[in-house]
Structures are given as C-alpha cells and as structure tokens.
Length: 387
Ligand code: MG
Image (cartoon, rainbow, N blue to C red; front, side):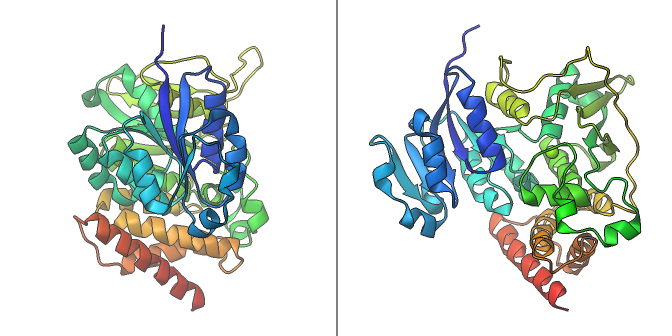
C-alpha cells in the first residue's frame, strides 16, 4: 500500500514524547517529514538532532533561549521564529498535515488550541489540553473540522479497541494503570516518600512531572478526565484497573460482555506512530511482544484510600466546567513544590482538593476564564505551601 508522505509540526520536540516522535520519523522511511518544530530551552540540542531532517520552521518558545540562539548554525532553508506567534505561524502553515501536541503541562494548551482552530489533524500527547478545556476544545474541533487523535498510550489503546464496535455498544472503558513506584507502599510509607523514590518508575521512562503524577496516580485521574471528553463518555462508563506490567494499555467492554484490549510493550513509539499513520498501520521501530516467552498479566482494583487522586479525577470529570483547569494547575504547582522539597508527597493531592473546593465553579468558561483560573489555582497552592 502506498502512503503519501505526511508533514509534521512537533510542538515540544525536546521533551520525552517529542524525542520519541523524532525516532518514529527517523524510522519511517520517508513516510513522515518534519516540517517544523518547537523547543523551549533546549533549542541548540534539538537543532543538532534534527539537522538531517532540515525543518522549514523552528520555533523557540522561551524568549531568552531564542534570543541567545546562534542562528548561523541553522540550515539556510530553516526559519527561526519565536514565542506564541511563532507557534501560530507554524501550525497554520498549509503545508502542515499533522500537528503533534507534545508540550508538557498547561503551557501546551495554547498550541493545541491554535492547531485545532486551524482545522488540523492533531496528534495529542498534551493531555492537559483536554483536562483544562475538554468541552471547549472538542466543540472547536467539530466546528473547524479538526481531528484529535490520542497519543497517550491508554487513550490510543481505547481508540484502537473502540473500532471493534459502535459507540452505542460500549458498556465501559477500562484504563489500565501500572500503579507507579508506590503501588505496594503502606500509607505510612507514602507519608515519607522521597523525590528520588517518586521518580523511580517501574515500567515507563518519562519526564519528571508525569512520573510524579504516576506515583500519586494523579496521571490516571487526568486520564479519566481526558477520556471523558475525548470519547464523549459519562464518568460511570470509565473505570481504572491496576495492571503492573504495563502491557495491556487499556480495554473496552462492549454491551455483549466482550472485552477488546490493545497489548504491546511499554514503548511510546507505537501510539505515536499509530496516531501519525491513522487510519493506516505501518512497519515501525517500537518494541514487540515476544509470546514465545512466558508472560504474566495481573489485574487488580485500585486502592482509593491510598490513592485519593483517583476519586478526585472522577469528581472533576463529572463536574466539567472550570474544575479540570483548577485541578490541573493546582497539581502542576504542587508537584513542583514537591520536587523542590517544599511539600510532602501525600500533601500534593490534599492541597489539590482544598484548592478545588475553594474555587468559584463556572460551568461554561471561556478560554480566557480557564487561563485566568489556572493562574489563580497556582497562587492558591503557593499560599497553601506557605501556611
Ligand atoms: Mg498515559
């Protein structure tokens, strides 16, 4: 089967997902081309790494790093742009087929928004975009004819499994969670958990923020919210199961009782490649399961007492409105304080709950209102930490 080459814009090329995307492109035998990319601080490094691709546009999103960058190192065909205007110019370029939204955290919302507004196909790794503004973003996508394809491994698995039936035939989706490094920690151990322990994930190699989120299980809470909007499912149809091996990436149960799952080793190159190739499948470089070796798959229900983030995720997914933006911002800020040694591990989720309960809920916020309440929630966490 022939496969027309697809031009990519990678937002957040220097992060963990950005780098895996570069791997997928390098192994794609020309199926994907890098038209443009953005990097925040590691501009020089990413320019070196992408030299062989000759991107048309490189955007430095950190003004200081962009100003300090030596443009003489760029290929003469490559244009250097800066900041949010640079992202806007990149994602609206008619030559871009797919925008990979891989900027970490709420900083990724604006770029995702611009790409959806431009009617592009968006391969979405930045779950915060949907957590913060799910209903707004999905409405905008419908309006502009944009397609949002998940890169998050659980959502990619659900998306793949959903193709076995109709939306009306879905009984529930079941998101798998590795349980993180603290899966078997007692409540006492959790109270004393250190940064080094939290950053030691058993199955996935990821950036520090998402690794801490995996330890608190806030990552799964955010994924519940992401799934609620992405698949337009009520929260009573979304469940979580602990699966320590991270081989089954999620499951869909249909009304007849059939459960369809997607399995592969924990390797982000596969969900990235699937989103970029969709609706096709192609050869790729991701690790493969070897079923000639014996393989054990365990599943057990999550412990909501030790991991209260999960209940918080369900409540916020149910509430909608401004709740997602508040939880997301409060958590980002709290994780930073934890990484700086200013907050205990178990205080991350407690602080998030307090800020959520304190906020003035708006059921139909604008994008501006979401960005405003994001800033408010961060300030509230700073106050929480100082008292
Ligand atoms: Mg995930």
